[in-house]
Image (cartoon, rainbow over all chains, first blue to last red; front, side, top):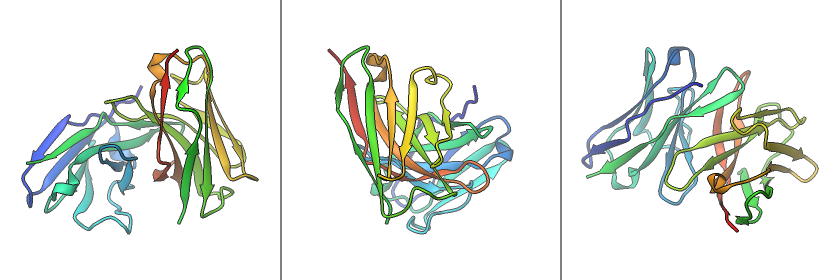
Length: 107
Length: 122
């Protein structure tokens, strides 16, 4: 089955930029969606279609893709950004796949 | 503003059937742009997609759960439901319902329910 690979953890100091990667075969041809999940809360969409930010998400959040790696970029990181982040694609059109998740620690 | 409200028991005995319902408000389920999905998350672990349903009743399931899972929809009540049979401790998880926003393919999960912790235990 299809696998998306994320680093287990990323650490960043407040005010710096965090980058969280998501890799997978043929990812270059797929739309990648990103979710933030704060402790005890439901996931929340922060980027869809690899690069589009929902209107209620701060501009500090952005997405990019190069080859088979998608990246979630969080600029000017704040303490409130500390959370788990998951990437998501559809394998063919019949099965959703999530990455294993990345825990963002704000030092 | 669309909202998804989950309901159902938080404790299920082994070998029995898990049943959860998601009630949609703030918009119609009968929209060509949406699927309605279930996702679960075992304690301390990542997200696992369970399956999707279209308002007309078409379904897709995770192959690893397909033999035990059923998702149904009742648009007259603005609800969709999950049934998972023959549960074991491995099915203990927080279960989420979500709206999938798709255009010409499959899309992103842009609205989520509050989550229901279901514990499988005797």
